[in-house]
Image (cartoon, rainbow, N blue to C red; front, side, top):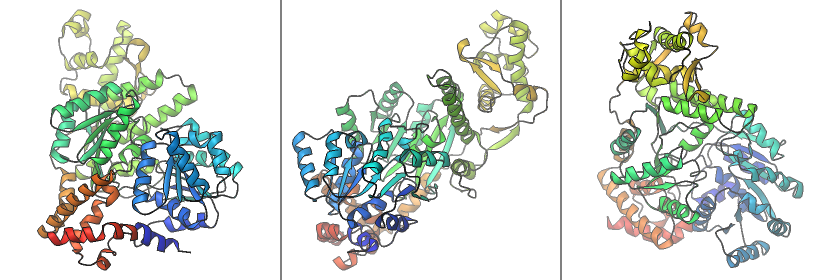
Length: 603
């Protein structure tokens, strides 16, 4: 029998394991269970694919998305692995053939959705088959407090009851310690070995900007830093998705919408195009993306504030799976804070749910408002401590912090005086008008120009005051009365600021130079190739695109950019030389070796 390393080299074309992959594989080969936390792009799939190839029987992979199953099965078949899936996209004849292959022992791996797996028919199929292992992908979906809960995942503990001697592995890229304990409990993995890799994705540049005409900001970001790149833009609502997609398309950025309100056929078509076409931007709600295996997504943008750090990390992790430079960009403003607070306040959840949602939002706001390294703050949420990263906006262009105590006292005093003297509450815009001394018709009509706070904040701009208010909301020093049509009110914590008992350091937004840091990093990766190497690389990409079209698969299923870049550098002349290139396994060498060498020779 082959060893894991031999299988890695022969089938997948990689020379050595990374991190704890070897230890995880050895655990499963010995019949043990494993709970694996590994960042997106860290090589989670190999941790169950290799044991499935080495153990007797078929590896069953529980996957939540049809598109992900099809993508992984296509990639495995290109490697010569006998893989299939069962899902609702198949007609009964196709499903029946897969079931036959399963019963006859002709499959190495079978991908199935959790709701399909738990049907009587599928359970009966598994009971009549030899099973090598169970892999539960995207295991955070079992957490009822998580950002992507799937009720059907709760039934997966039945696997241990029916097949107690079959090893199981649960994998996710996103889980705090509390979520990890919940996954283990709900999947009956209390005795599983835990493997927790670093959450850091050093190739991703994190940047959060103050929201100001967000569509214009997004367009400028894409044009200046990622023109022609594949990317994902996340929006909070379906209408916003459609609006942003149309706006980008009208301005020369090819973009498609994706949300749960679209019919299934249109969603499937858009996802297939995103996976197969280069330079396409997917504008989507969080309904899109989990498990998307596209390695060359160069940016993920958020035009609305995510609900939690877990959600943000999961979504930004879809950028740069190939290890090449990528950007996580977000525009964030006052209205985001108000909107998220409103959603929690008006949700149908109980008080425990609202408290937990509030804590998750507070952590997300803390990440947005920090003056320290963003990556430090992000990873600290998951219990990991690092030094300042040098690859986020606060490291590259450190923000200013300033003593905003007096400004905060002025704003809180305006809210207080309106309530105490007039019994009135108003929203942000009107209060800022009062502070800046603007004689608007509404200010004059209400007589608010006679208040002692009228004009005391003329030294700050409208935008600066909105920044102060946003940070006071984020810190819980101001609240929004949603029953009062979004008016502002003080909190119990406001008193210490008004009395001068608290010094309040705030973040000052400054005009940023157009450093285009991520562009420089990407350019550095490209210019690492000499002119003749770059010419070979582009010829190889064109050859790969042609082959991918013939096979009806995404280009990266044939070869990743990193593999083609290495071929371009090494300029192999023989199959033996090509065999040592990272990502060229035996099957791909047999299938594409001569054609690839021919392409190199023609340049």
